[in-house]
Length: 149
Ligand SMILES: O=C1C[C@@](O)(C(=O)O)C[C@@H](O)[C@@H]1O
Image (cartoon, rainbow, N blue to C red; front, side, top):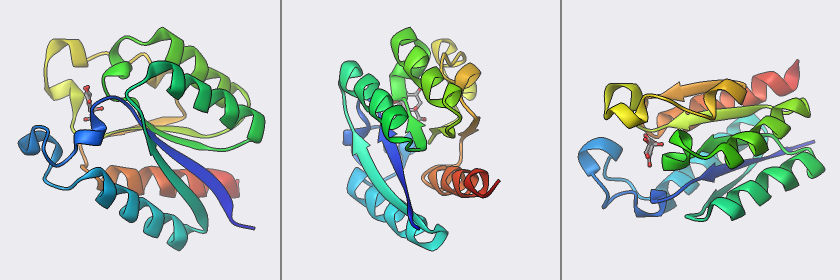
């Protein structure tokens, strides 16, 4: 059976391709969507890529993931650094025994001081940073691996 996985992206990631291309690359969200869908297919995962600038919507997606038992790949974007609401919601996902892989396109630790701390990392299954879009592939591989355990 193909297992559904959601790949959720936080604020400003809808602007991939035009936002700081030196940091986030020249490829847009649509390309990320196509890449993740194709990688998922290879790994036997039915991947749905979402993006929102709205914290409440992202939190709602976590509640639904718990209810529907859906593993999560999450790039929380700026929510990473301050959203205790999203952190609590992400915690519910891993508490439910579901994988939640945190991904960052850049390496936030190597950037501004406010990016050095993640409120998501302490509750995530694992974190991948600094690998560009390829980090999402690594996160999907990790999810596929964890689902086989
Ligand atoms: O919006 C983002 C993107 C990001 O999560 C990344 O993918 O590298 C890193 C965050 O610090 C930043 O706020």
